[in-house]
Length: 217
Length: 225
Image (cartoon, rainbow over all chains, first blue to last red; front, side, top):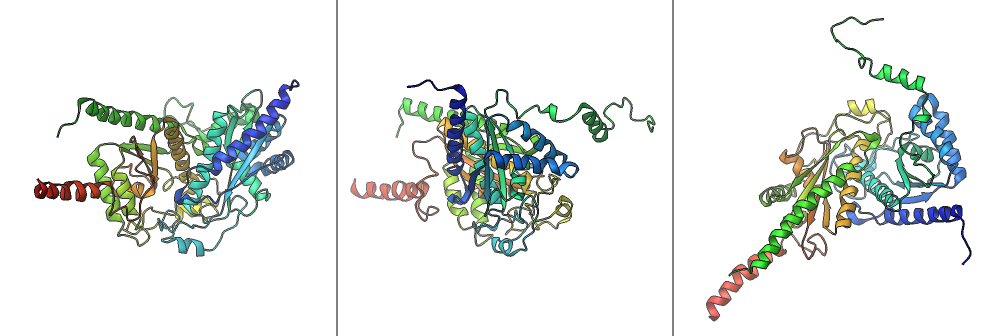
């Protein structure tokens, strides 16, 4: 057998891992025993598009913009983005009331609201099934030793860009085989000045020593 | 009728294994991911046999509250055979929407959801919707955290929203709970949550025991001895 290089091993291993994650998500526990989720794995060009879209949201959603900046860095090393989606209407007939309608029939007849992120109103149990699948995929990634994080921002962007068709709700599981775990402690995507400014705005009393004093500037 | 000492020991150890497993499952469910890293779910272990029975009775009673909840009776029969029940709650989905305007609930902004009228607290309504779906989705992660750990440990499990709704009605979960689901676990040779016959609420281990062993066998014994 010829010698196989590390890069080749890792990229083909990643492809295999994504397939196994899809199997785990597909066969995960779900209410009513019916699997209606849809799974796709995006190509690198799609991920670039999503990164640009997130970045362009800028002031509208600083969080999405951060994830856009992050994605630009992420796709420099082997990674994959799995999208999992489902329909919003209930086929459970549980009549549980969690959606705000007394019966599933009322929910299914309710007027649909469109937005960039999802189509609502949606069945709570559909959402639960969808996210259990996402967690099962993430759990499989964890067991396989991949770096992994579940992103709703990237899923919302993918949904807005029609990267996954025939669904009303979506979530995404991003995995990577980068040399360093890229998903946590992402300080470098914020500048220190920006961080200080936001912290001061959100927690103005943090540095106060005494509440009775008049500290108006 | 005496049971051998070693069999008694087995029964005792089995019960201890349930207690231990329930706590390990709680650990896995608690450390599963949360949207935005914000804590919101609590997990409550119901392991006392009497407490499980209370829960089952509530589930059974709720079956009559909504014509679609007929399966609650079957759920109650299964839960009766459970060794422990873990109740997972979502504490922020009613009072504290995620403020990301995701539209999953059908309200374009979280402000609209805050202002929306909630379903009244009446028998036919299980959860006080509309809920913040983005928040309540954390329950999915907690469920799968528990389920995947149960599979690793080789513990039989079943997931029931009926018991979650019953726990909310009984007031045994925190008062801000908006959504609640239960995972029942069992350490027995045959999972009580699989291979469920039709009419299980009428024909199950308890009723079979009662009719065949407790009633017919003593009669048989009286007559033929």
